[in-house]
Image 1: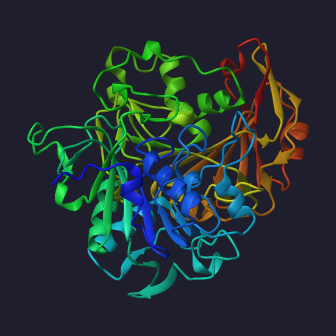
Image 2: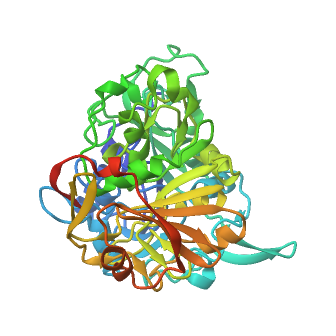
Length: 529
C-alpha cells in the first residue's frame, strides 16, 4: 500500500496534547509543507491544541521558509524545546518572527537546550533509556542552578536535572516520548524508503525517526520527489520504509533560503572558488581576516555563525586554497558537512564542495570527543569574569546552538565580533580604521545577561582563547582579558578602553598593531550592525 499522501491528510490525525518533533537547520532540510499544513489546520479547525514541539535546531528563516513560525500560535503551541531559535527581521514587513513574540511575551513554555543535548537526547529516547547524561553545560545557563534552560516564566517543569555520578556532577535530561515527527529527505518510493542523495545535510532526520518509533509514534516525511521502488541501491536508502508512516511529495521545496537547488552543496558537482563573490568590506570582514591568521593546516577547524563563518571565505579570497591547498585545511560546522568551504549568511550550516556529510548525532560525538581542535565562534557579550553570552541578550533569544559543546571541547578558541553593536559605522582610510559612529550597545559588560560559557574556566583547564574584534584583539588569561593588538588609527583610550564597561586585566607592554592590509581598501563608511 502506498504511503504517499497530501500534507493536510498527513497531519490530520495529530491529537491535542501530543508532542511533535521536527528536523531543519535554518532553511536546510526543513519540512516546511508539513509545518504549514499543521498551522493551517489549527487556523481552520482550532485544533490540535496544547502541543509540545521539539526542534533540535532552529528551523526555517521566518521569511520564505517559515519553518517553526508556521506553528507559532497561542493555543496550538503550549511548549517548545529548541536547540536554537531564529530571530531575523523580515525584509518586507520589518517584523521579527512570531515565535520570538510568544517567547518575549511569556505566552508559551519555552526551553533552550544545547544542540549537542537535543541530538544526543534523541538517541536515548529511541533506545528507551531513562535519559541523556553529560557533563557538557555544567555551570552554564542550562544547569538547573542557573535556570535549567528556561526561556520564559511559564516554563516551570524541570526538564534538566543536576545529578551526581561516581562523585562527579552531571546534567541529566530525562527522556519523554515523541508522538509524531516531521522529517525531510530527497526521495521516497511508494513504501516510504527514504534517501538523502540531493541534500546538503542529514541533521537529526534519522535520530528523530528512530526516537518516534521508540516512543510508539508516527513518522511523516516530506520529500522533493517520488521514485519507483527498487530503482535505488540499498546503500542509498538511509531510513527504511517500515519506520515511515506517511510521505508528502513537495517538488516546489527550496533547498535552503535563496537557493532552489545547487548540487555543489552535496558534492554532486564542484564549483570553482573563483565563482564565489567577494565579501563586501566591513568591520565583520576585518574580524574574519584577523581570525584567519589563527587557522592552521591539518587541524580540524569548526566555525560558528556570524563573522566566524566568513573566515574560510576570506581565506579563499586571499588565495590560500590554490593548487589543491584546500585539502590541507579541514573545515566543518556543527551540522556535519566536512571539507570544502563553510558558507555564511542564510547558507551557513552547509559547506560548498564538501567531501563528506555526517548525521547530526555523530557530528556531536565528534565535537564532544574533542576532535574539533580549533573553533571560531561569535560573541554577543563578554564580561569581567571571563564569561561569554550568545544565547539570550536584549530582546534576542537565539539560544546556544552548538556553541556550548564546541567551546567546552575545542583546544583553541577564538571569539569574533564587532567591538560594539547597534548602529556602528566604520571607515577604512589608507590602511587605518576610523570609527565614524560608535555602536549604541556595548558588548564588554561587567556581567553577562546569560551565561553561555565560562571561557575563564576553560583557560584553567588548558584551553587557549582570544577575542578578536575590528579594532582590538585580547588574549583570555587566568587573570582576565589582556589587550594585545589594536587597529592602526585607533585611540586605545577613546576607542577601546572607554567603550568597555570593565577594565581589562592588562594592556600588553608591547601592544602590537593589527595588520594594516586588513584596512587598506579605500571605501566609504561601511556599516556593521
